Length: 238
Image (cartoon, helix red, strand yellow):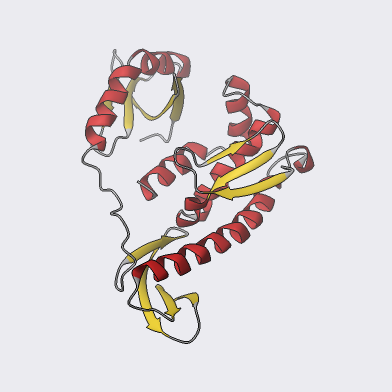
């Protein structure tokens, strides 16, 4: 594997792919069981030729990803009972519920310790842990925003006027025309470097509102490995 990657848009979809250069005359596209797209390309094929072929086969690629996606592991519905695992910043934490006069949550050595007046009521545990994770998301996203802004030549030109943390159903984040940055609270489950990818992606929209070539040129300059981070995010929170 050369480390060469690419991305094409097809309607509302983005197809990221890896490229393997081989001594061959034709270009072949495969979709692996984990939904990764791999292009076997002749040594002399240009990036434009490769992207054009992926775009030409995009409908087939998306169908294949849909088929394999049915069999990818999915995070089961959380029941908020002792022993259950929950993700936090890319790591699994096992839930421990302790009867206590306090209601609070701490993360200690791979455990979420939930102290509760009602330890046998999962709905109370859910409320306590969900609230704690939201607080962590607000603070973590604020810190990562500053790290992301520092990657830009003129950080203040990209700074959002407002940051909103919300439970989004279909998106990891968005940037409004009024420079309001909205981030999905579920991102607190993801590794930090993938959170950074989402924030950088949205900051780029301050300068380039649309997903045109100029947008991806900017994203590539600010975060050259963004495609790998995007794949890790999707796998971590599948």
